[in-house]
Image (cartoon, rainbow, N blue to C red; front, side, top):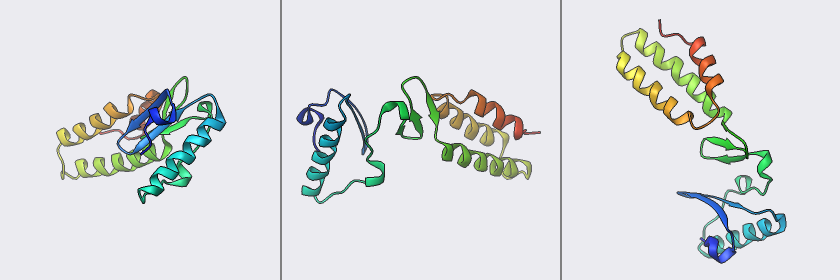
Length: 134
């Protein structure tokens, strides 16, 4: 992988195999993308073209399970849908006695702990009002 210092990139994020580079210069970003693609090709690796985007941060940057904007973070829609389905399934398991309340509670609290890093208060309020435990 091309190191951020080799590119001259002052602002970047990296998590495992996800990388986000930041610049105010669109041409510089496109050049960095091409340099990364070339370096990876030399190593017989490729990137996911559809996910390797050059876009303004005001449009939101997809990062892990969130979309990060300059002023806030949102949970990706598919993650909210996935947990809604999972919660329905967990509640069915709990009501039928297949899992304990502690198991249900631990799963829900784990999800809440993850999504609290985004602006999800309204989502959580709506989700738990629509899926009461009782």
